[in-house]
Image (tube, rainbow over all chains, first blue to last red; front, side):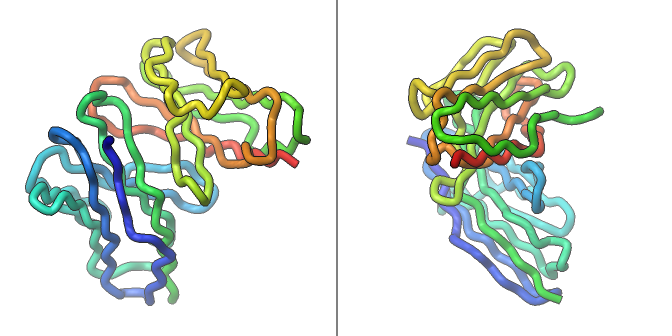
Length: 113
Length: 114
């Protein structure tokens, strides 16, 4: 079935460090891919998305490129801030049911000053 | 827009008691989703509705769980009887149901079953 696998956390970085959170997926057909972010005590909110191969989603300095050849959608940011500390979820929309999202287990990012 | 509203924010109950979680989706949204979040299993889709009709309830763990959506502005998730392993954060989310678009999440209900 369709699934998302992302790197386990926590990921601990110093401010201004480079961030990569790996995400790979398994799906039939052509899913859309998403990154959601969850700040402490809040619900998830969309960070960025990509709907087809080679698309790059970007927002707030974060980027991710839809790589069909490696079935990956890794999240990157060149210089993290303390305010980026949160849990990050990779997700895909099931190709057979376009309104249904399947999430990875989440990766906790802790940025230290 | 007030966003997706869930209540209560926190619920502490004893094993065997009935628990009802409530959700008000964003006005105009046609799809509503219930998710459960735990450390062990991450974020799991329990059930989702389209135009108040349950479309996929394959994620509902067992018969103790039930969900209803009597109208476009209200949904409930009920657990009867509750068990300690039901302790989790339960999220409600909604969108317009037009396809591969983002979900708007509520702030969640933290449930603790003692």
